Image (cartoon, rainbow over all chains, first blue to last red; front, side):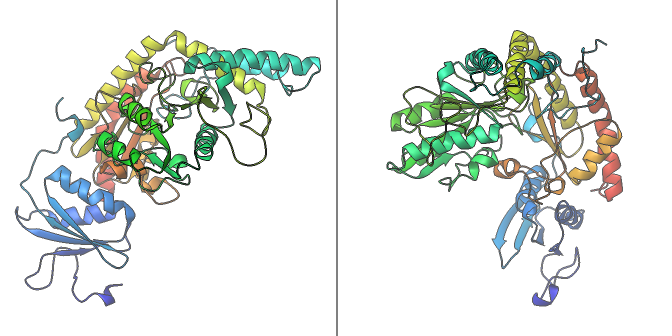
Length: 102
Length: 386
């Protein structure tokens, strides 16, 4: 499937000068989020990471992961898959958010 | 530990969306198989006896819903009752409109009905947006509206009084889905709310049985050939032993409702605290304004199926809304509508204490085992250092 795409290389490495691109098309939950988190690990706040995924669960899970981790995500629908562009935020605590008051 | 008289469930059962029968209801059922097996519409003595017992059970179950026996019918499943209840509302108002207003976290059987096109969104806690619901009601061509009293997957209670009032203002009949609340959440069903109310006997220790109340004065009618049984709502009369068991389960559960609710609420609080203390675990649903006995959390970087198997290996039976655990490979529409994590999802639906006297120990064991179970799964998936 990567033949149709000009750019995306393997996890963590993008085209020259571009953001790292994770191509998780064909993988099912929870793999896309796991690979995305792996690519984001160690990168500084303000960096952008891109995920390509066609799993329906990613459509809920990537924004949920970004909210839990303080990242910002924008979605672009493409032909049969979705591009998730994640702007990494400051590291934050990771306790259950719905109960953060307790 | 006190044991129930009959058939104790396996220890570790923390998934009672459909739980074991209440032990007294199970006894009633066994006796009724011998005495109330007949078709209640027959005029011979066995038929008359079944009819008399059915009438008594209907009175008990109608009282449970706060309606009159003439308003209450029983159906083979809660799903059937929901479908029939909504179909009757829609058909009776087909000249007023075709649209059905429904929240995004309603049960799938309702969201798949004709007329439900754009479900009303919910917030991150799973509570329907009352303002958006009111806008949808005002659209002009709504035949009926649907709202759950509380969500069975995440426990969040819905704003029933507000939505009920908006529906009355617009003259749109409301189907209230109380299948998760009746028998578990004594304060969860405002008296008199809704034109149609549906409940499930399995929620309070009975067999799965749909209870459908259509309030007097509601415009309601089914399309197609006339049905004879259950006030014209079913093609055939029920098997009476099932209805008797449901009525007995209600009697038993209602008698201890306050203590049961207090205890369940406290146990769920324990699960919420323990789960939230594990790294990268999100406990979802309203922490306070919720069903007493339901809790859901999602474990980041894990697979729901693997996590369920790991907990099962430790003797704990839970459920999940993750896509990986469902045959359709779609995550729970409830979690997706809330915008919360759908993978690594664990759902606990506490059985009644009367059904599972060891449930407090089971909950404590879950709280103890959870951190290590999560760590084990993450190690296996190679995600423990993320």
